[in-house]
Length: 486
Image 1 (cartoon, rainbow, N blue to C red):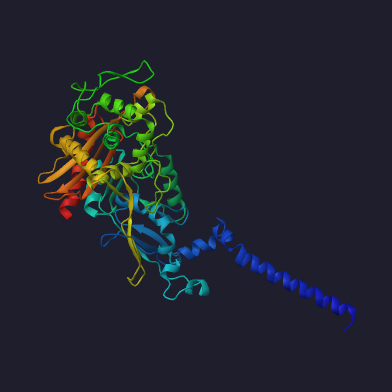
Image 2 (image 1 turned 120 degrees about the vertical axis):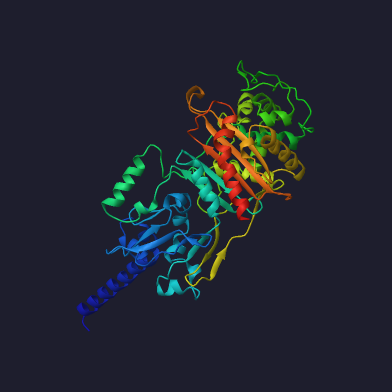
């Protein structure tokens, strides 16, 4: 063999090796990057080449798939789309996925290895299996009661089972129909443009992704701090709480909407919601104690997933004494999601234990075999059982003889707390009406349901009673729906 042939053969071999190395680099090393590249339409085409698995509420299927007649063979459909949008989110061929459609996408689309009948079968064959089905924890009756109660007003409802953390209702209003975003072309793009331009933000999941000043509902946390630290030992003992109360280190005076708050006991101050008593309690117990207690109830947690991510509810850990006082009545920079405040009510109703909230009960493959299931997990011991018992006395007094009478349910024990959160420049914005609560069936020791309701556009005076007037009836309807189901 002459030198020219040998050189040509060596060069060809070198090219072959380079080709194999590059193929390996592309198919192995860069596979994930190419899969994630928005310009790669093959992934989307493959995802919608077969029907997605379904999302269920109880035994009812609330999603589906329809043939499109184009290269994206199937598009998502939704049953009662606006009702369940804060749970399902959307699966769009143009705009991707959100909420459960996003967090459970690998299961719903059939790419998850958990669906493999044979281990590693998907990795070996690259074949796409039929999607699995996701069973939620949502109670259909509670979801509808919350949705009907808000009646299109801006606001949100979150409800859960305090003993397990199962989420029973997640409603955000105003809502939208995710089916409008499912396809391609002008219909989907026009819907997307309109929804994003809407000042009411219908695609914002207010139940888990929006935080609000919790107002006087946060007094549950302040009362817990006072009881846990020993600052208050007797619920009926009078406190040294002037009315009005001067915020520490300032010339600013804090007053109350009603009378009877001067030196009021914790029991009476909670029942009629005295700002002065709770602001002074927060300032007296101090920043560290207040922050520790708030965090025990779930505030400042950046890792909470249900599995969609939940916005962090905030209690500042660096504040001056006057700011601590305001934060102790749910003002200043204190913010919370409705789910967070349902967790607060649930921890009280469950004897002090805060369970991790979760939205997915189980996932099955297309044959109905369970491939994964959820189990209740303790998140924190929010307060001792003794403190929880005292907090229950306070919350139940609000419903029996306080600002939350509209939440009462015959035959059940209901505890609650009203709140109106002021906001805007100089607190001149329309107040947010809050109500958080739990309900026990007759004779039960622990709560079967906990609820938080916030109504953004409440037409009410700036008093805690507005939470009882606007939000409490919604909470009552949700709690009654759960108790009736059980």
